[in-house]
Image 1: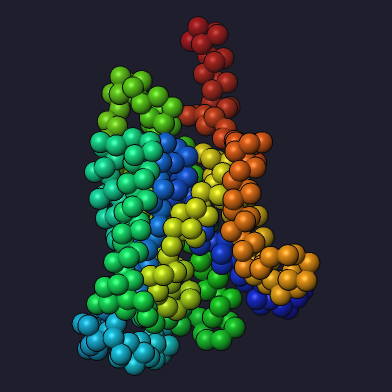
Image 2 (image 1 turned 30 degrees about the vertical axis):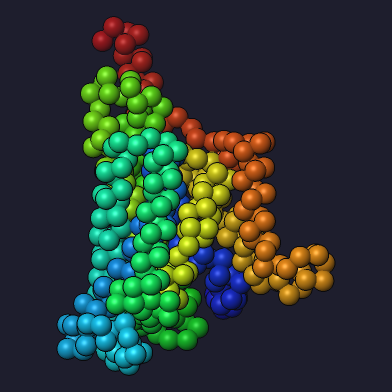
Length: 359
């Protein structure tokens, strides 16, 4: 039975669905925290994602190279990139603990980079609202992508760079991709539990109060500026980890890959389909979209015989059709947001019974 499960998991299509779902689940949960719970129009999700990818690919890689006495300056992202990363991979393969440490270091740097982007984004969030804030965040994301593409010393420019394989502790070949997918899926589950605990905490209830009626939240003593800043920092850190995991999984970084369609509009579609403000709905929306997207990629050659357009455009058509259909027919998503009780239902019933007795 175990052999059958492993054979099923080794299927490239299954691996593609799982890794896409895991990475985009992390990014979409961060978006749901900022937009679904806090009401911030986050149209610049790609900003923190690409910052995290640069942090894991260029900055953490340089740190590892420097610690091992290898060139860590402009050489790291230049012609010697393949040679330096090759030396790093040999060291990571021979020392599993070092490889695990490199994974943790990469995620930590990515989270810090994403959090910094969230902190910087909080400044316009203090003064701007709704559409103006959304457009500003969108511009921030595009600006960082352009810097990454055309400033070669940062991360190789348009050519990109190869990044150290921090998953070497699980092996190479097929086992590497299966094990790294399962590790990323495990991290996504931990992020889900973390965001879910935030949503049920006093912090999460304050975010919903701010989202539903900012003036009323202010009257009750909530610091709106502080709440927005904390939300953007936490959301940015999580999104940065998502971008880092994609770079580490693919083993390379190219700024061109991190565009607003894939890393801003796709997560919006996942969130809208699953249910804004409902983390379980985010899981469902991400699973459905990731499955459909992977199937389109896997069977695009066969689809050519049945559809009058290039199958490569199907995913772009899909996102537009889904968003329009959801907005028209089910704006609350598949799983609408449910009210969160501050205490368990049993505890509330106990308090109610005590009050009825006059205790």
